[in-house]
Length: 399
Image (cartoon, rainbow, N blue to C red; front, side):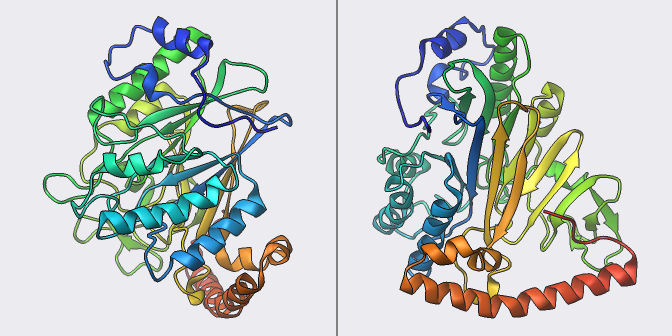
């Protein structure tokens, strides 16, 4: 049975926070949501949706696909990681957010929101105003951290075993910002890193053990390039390094890789210590991001999986192999592990469960996705196979 939604913080969690002597003033109980719970079967499923970029021309079909994904996957929580409905006016943004959130509200699925670089970049509204819109829906468990931390929407979602009130797993949500003062992409700031470290240490002191966790944010960490291999610019399936002229990178055989690079990763220009703090703490298993729309890959580096998810929107039937969503599954009996898979719209449209659940209009859309997607899939498969045979190097790993 799924236990969810915003209720009063349990006494155990209040005591946990109150008892901790945090060095960071921002580490306070209002940056922790009410606990969520593993199901009676000991599992917990997260639907990672990112970069929906909803606008007038794609909102109807995007929401058809997202609604079908919710019905098919039956997630316990939806993680929205930014660039969701960046419209030109506040009024248009209200409409797009309503289209998005009604899909979850009507299905009683809890939603945790973080923001991307586009969510408030035009200055027509603030992140705080947008967060208030999301939090006007009962399904939102998101937190506006106010003046406590940089940005808007950095908080912790604790998971407990069914029938218990002590966290056994954590989900960290970070606002990774938009742009720095020089126009580069931003990244998680120093005070957010200090907050994470303080809360992580306090929870370990109070529980007597590390509490394993996952992190979700929009912009990937700069260490992604440390986990890739620098190569000659003529190397097939290599990509230029952002902000660095003349450097090209691809998967390194020295690390465990997942999925495929389709474009260059776009981290922030400056590093404020987030990844190093997580390596030092040893409790984060993976950092899930969006931002790079067609990248569905992961690299295990220094014990942490750096993972990027596909843009979850309808962007034309021919692009159905480049867009989709990610599923992350947890087990309470294996808190140091997680499972994840990528679902592309092309494969999604071929799923018998999806076809059975779709109405007539959705059936026509799914048929178009299946028909047009096969051409891109076939072309991509040929190019990937040729490259791997020609170079002897793997460019596409299992997701």
